Structure formats: structure tokens, C-alpha cells
Amino acid sequence: MTDADGHELIFAMLFNNYKGSSPTSVENEIAVRLAEYSAEGDGGDDDSSPIRNVKPAEDVTLRAVNP
Image (cartoon, rainbow, N blue to C red):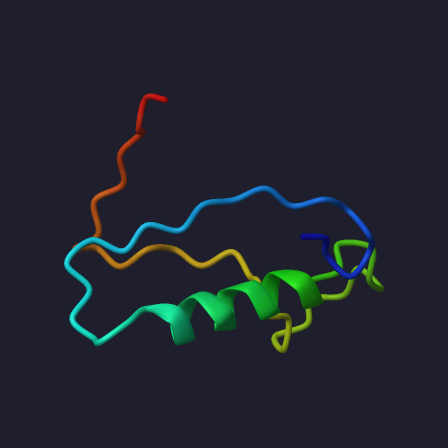
């Protein structure tokens, strides 16, 4: 997939213990937001940007996964 600027994006989505019938709608929303993202925009601090630097909630544990 590519973003709005034509840059190739490589990513993975993992849903552990998902509580819905299927995570497909969540996957689709993430894919749409990634595809619409433009790093080459006007450079302004636009709150409507689909991707922003957001600090994780305090109860979130981030850990590296070795390939």
C-alpha cells in the first residue's frame, strides 16, 4: 500500500484477544488513515491529521518484538 504521497508503507496489525466478532472494520479504518496520510503536507500542526504523535495511556506496556 502507499500513502497519499506515493511512499510505500509496510506494516503489520496484531489483535490479541480481540473482543469483537472480527477486527476487519478496525483494520479497514487504520488502512484508510494510513493511505490518506501525507508527510509532505503544508507542515502545519493540523489536528485533523489522521496520524499524530500521541503519548500512550499510562496503562499501556510497549515492548520490542524480536523478528
